[in-house]
Length: 310
Image 1 (cartoon, rainbow, N blue to C red):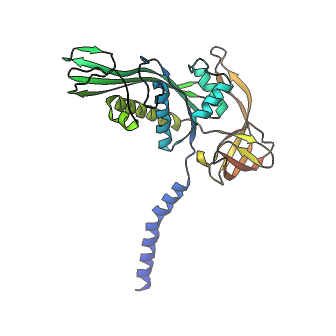
Image 2: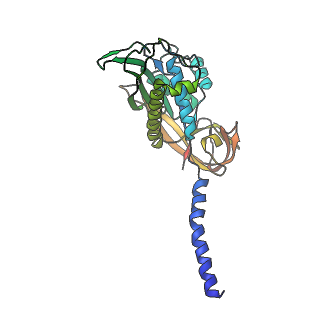
Image 3: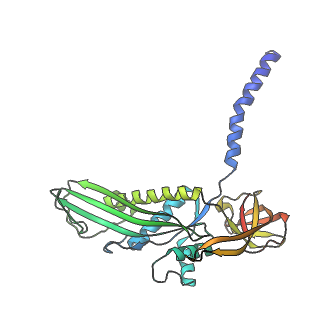
């Protein structure tokens, strides 16, 4: 092989490797995960049904949403036990009803960017005889078809400002024809049994739609963490679980006076000042939920200072 042919082959190899190199570089940059808290949904339906686990419908459906969000691998979802413990300690939502203010306050205390709460407005079956009359009587079918209906009013709250970012009413129906069943009980032995039912399919459709809303909202929501402890070694409340990598550099801000809307009483944020930058040297503290950092620029970093992407 002459020198000219060797050069041509070399250039071909280089050009073939460029896309691979670029792809690997892109994969090394993991997107930071927004932290999300999902509160138990209030049950405003007939209250005659319970989950296969024995849970009330609202609690079961919110747990289903938590599982669906975790499976996307796009969020750091707060564990239910941690959320309930905070609600009890701070006596928030003691009536069992979560409000916009409750969600924002608890979410801020947990260090999450997005809080989700809502209520189940419809959950059950209706029966159709001759295609004319509908009866909301559980699962009593002696006619042509059965329809399961699931309705949820859902709210997404920015915990920093307390603002409702999105409010939607999700309603799904699933029907099946040719049944001849007569049972007044909503009873399933396990999750698989539930998923194969028409009410299970309607519920999954509703949850999938809520996950889609969450993706759209989280995309435009600013990622943020906080300093746990300052000093020579700086610790922040985000780690590998949130997509933080060793070597990442963040900008640190200090919050000043809170700006409160005089009409609504809601926080509009606060004045801020940039105090420096920090670099991650260990992202696996607390099982990946916290990181150790060192100062790159600035000084005087303190607890509750805000940490953001550059």
